[in-house]
Image (cartoon, rainbow, N blue to C red):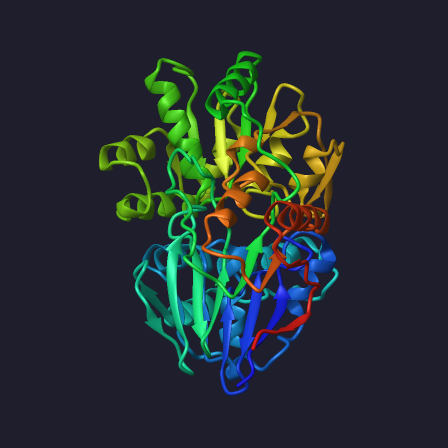
Length: 454
């Protein structure tokens, strides 16, 4: 029996992760993410899936972020009906993220049609809430470190990856061949998340390289966060923080709680304007075994911000002149309520737009952190006069040194290591280090490339 691996996403880019294993009689898909960033990438979400979705036996999910899970409703819409295997916390987060993704796409299409700025007449959503709910019914949560049987005789096991709540590295055993997918690896000393676990062995390894060409700064992110907020609010400004609702928001709230407990930023209100992030924070406190915080620490972290749920309250927040912090999704400013806050606050010098980690090429976040003087939002060119900062030390991704630390803890060299989920420069840089420091055979696959594993 042959075993082939196809790289259908996450190759040469940090989005759209999709890896297809094909034995000839069964197909297993690892991750099913949305392409994000450049228009050329986003348009790939509208192309037909390379194989018939109904021919896929199962999906195994590393974690809930939309660049890994966000195309699941589309896959189901096109005919997939098998199990979607993931960790228990990932299932809980997908309940929030996928519904919200469907809702946002429906609302964005309505907004585009109302204001006439779409090239398509009418603008249509990629999928909707009902499609997301159909995908959610297929979720099959499993525990970490326990083997689970897959259709076609394969077996899988999840290990903590540390990136966000529920994030996993996936071990697959099929046809006496071991294949490991790192998923997105977290930091070695994250203040909240568990340290990434390495597999005991692997015949073939697929490892991410988001930060494959750089090291995180050694600064104290809590101190930098406090300094930026204090400086901005002292000049009468507002700090807008685009942040991923799952992972980054909880870290930010944790730091703000620690700052306020130590007597800092006492008169600065913190607002969390993202219903999805509010729900995600509740789930975070429910799965205490998946992170380091105690129940009391979770309670205090979640209580540090004022939660904004309704659209009306969000609009009032945007028009309020008081100095404040607004945390709102999405983390790369690709959609969601944060776009309205950027339109309101980015044109004024007294304000600060603060990013919290990696900004993928082609996103508004990447443009702004690179010094763009304007960004296009809802068909308008919005001036960027506000101060723009990025605390890269807040990233939830392992840097190059941390990825190498994880690789070195694997028992023995794989037959081949495939370096994915990174811009080409980052993947190539990590490949060079894997070759030089480990002596392993490593490759940087291209989109659509196929590898024969057995």
